[in-house]
Image (cartoon, rainbow, N blue to C red; front, side, top):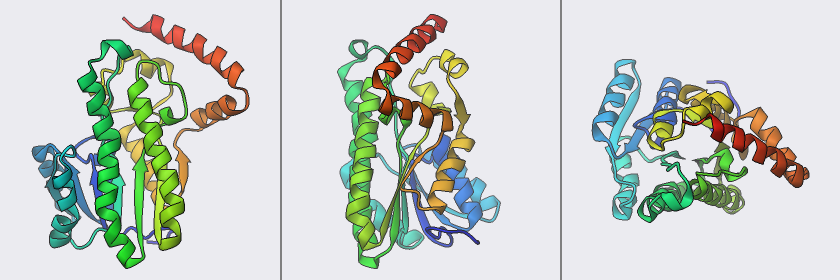
Length: 269
């Protein structure tokens, strides 16, 4: 391959949340590049299906079912992957979950689950994989966050809080790990039409009123950022412009956003 930034093939790339959505599509793209892909998620059957698809097209992939709420299971992943595929060179922190609804209407246990998967497991996975990368003096950690780390997210408040945490964690680590050879890539996709959104009960009206992308398109954005070691990539030009407006004209943005939110609410059943 002829590209700039972190070499992907024939490196071992570990991807969390590989059983659907962005993770599923990204695994296929990386395997097509020649990477050996470690597929990590809770749903073993889905991972086996993806492993079979990649293998059938000549790629190399291995399923590693793992409950990302289990810290001990996370800590065992680097060694499990190392025994099967070789030491991981790249970690893609992609797993996540959402919960749509008014803050007080969503039960506290669900809010905690969102924080556990979206933030706690990302910290745990990174903590597990970083030592081997530092020992080699080379590696790449990719964080799939969300534009909701930069924009208001009514009815997704705790999800937004978790993604604020992911983006802050990634940006801080980039200064800490970069000088020691481990590159940090932060990607913030916009609204993605995926199984993830459906499970979070995101209303279909959102897709009609707000620009959205397919899982494959979002995976393309992550893939692009990985190849270029992009420290921060907002994967939607329209949203990037909105973030700029919010930064420079916060009162104007708040007024416009409030109007847009009311219109979206009226479109919901």
